[in-house]
Image 1 (tube, rainbow, N blue to C red):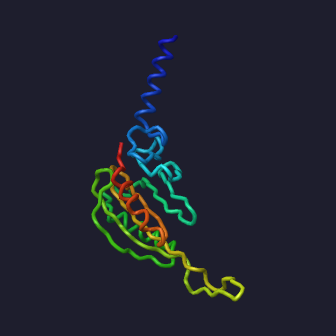
Image 2 (cartoon, helix red, strand yellow):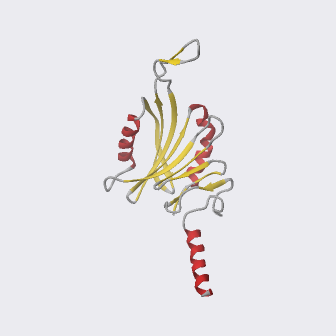
Image 3 (cartoon, rainbow, N blue to C red):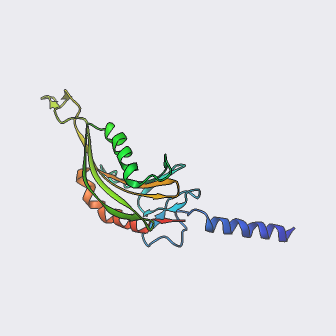
Length: 193
């Protein structure tokens, strides 16, 4: 009986080590970073230790939370609709859907990039929700249209097997540049299993 329990315990330990990553105990995490991807995910996403994690079924996210700064990074695995879909065809569809959610949408740049050792694309864009035509009364109340809220994004996307994997960095203009080094590290540390 002891032998069976020992074998089962050994297999459980191996499964935990080979599976996903435990945010606090991953020996492969770069210094100052933790793994936040779920065991079921087929990738490892490392974010700074102070970022707050959130895990979903086919997505992983983390955000920085200090004061008004809620910069976030998420990774999503999206099933490709057609065999042979490329990052460019996916981007055209994603861009159309994404821009429909905002009042203003502008692609700033597109360049080649890698994620997890796979060639893909990096899209940098901005989007604005609301308009800036609001007026403030003498009492400090806002009237008229909504006040505009601008966001800056960087999306790094690759196709692997039948999925498009995209890492999305989201921030506001005042905090966007302060986390670009972190974004660069997160992209370079990202690994597929």
